[in-house]
Amino acid sequence: MGLFPRFDEETPGGAQDAPRKTGLPRLWELVSRDFWDNFRAGFLALAGCAPFIAGMFFAVSTHVMLFAPLAGLAGGALAGPELCALADTLLRGLRDDTGRVWWRTYRKAWRRSARAALLPGALGGALLGTQIFLLLHAGAFQVDLVTGLALVLGMLLLLGMSLYLWPQLALMELSLGRLIKNSALLFIGQLPRTAGALAIFFAYILVSLRFFSFAVSLLPLTNFWLPTLPALALVYPGLEQAFGIEEKFREGQESPRDGE
Image 1 (cartoon, rainbow, N blue to C red):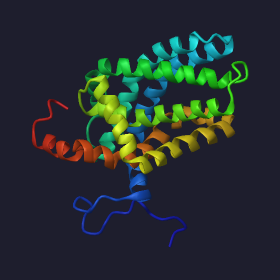
Image 2 (image 1 turned 180 degrees about the vertical axis):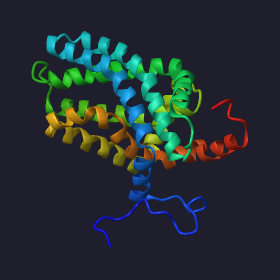
Image 3 (image 1 turned 60 degrees about the vertical axis):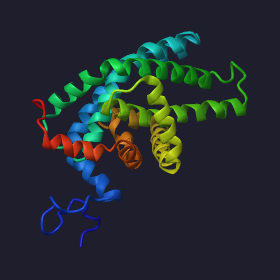
Image 4 (image 1 turned 90 degrees about the vertical axis):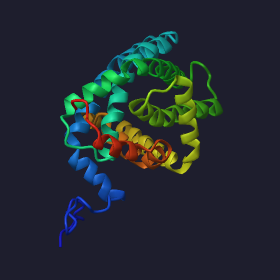
């Protein structure tokens, strides 16, 4: 008997008809099976967010508040398509849509949703940039404890909404208003799972800040996929129930794949 559980053992009688794993075994399956796809999509998402990060460093270092929403607006617009394509890659793993050529599938998903992702990315980036700037300049702006907590909660709310918004953009074409409305309803409708997903992000950020030098050295490897995969896996049942992802995937398997 080994010291650690073998999450990747095949079920006797063939894994094809075996029920889908749940919990940690399922998460391990997703990590081990789709690591390179998730890593590449996460790395490109990190690269897409580089202008936002650089812009925020400039805004914070110069202490000019106007630069924060402007950096967020431009950087968020550039990051939006990459974040949407990352959501598409992770969703394919969660619905077991494997065996495709990753770059071809990623590129097609990027082209399909790039234009629609610009506005949500820009607005979300501007809001996040402003919140970060105010939080880091709390002393200069005499931000009290209540306002500081409100800023933190606002950032968590924005992060939680984005966890539902990018998958919707990856799956279908919707107006911005409909995207926000659906995201809010899903956020509230499965609040315990949303809270769990936010806890994963919060823990990842705290650990990264605590061991900053080590976390920065690992950032090219862990990038955005590492915290996003378990968080998205946690809220995936709500997305599946709302949009019938699995049924549409099975229908797509029965029809031509348009060269994919």
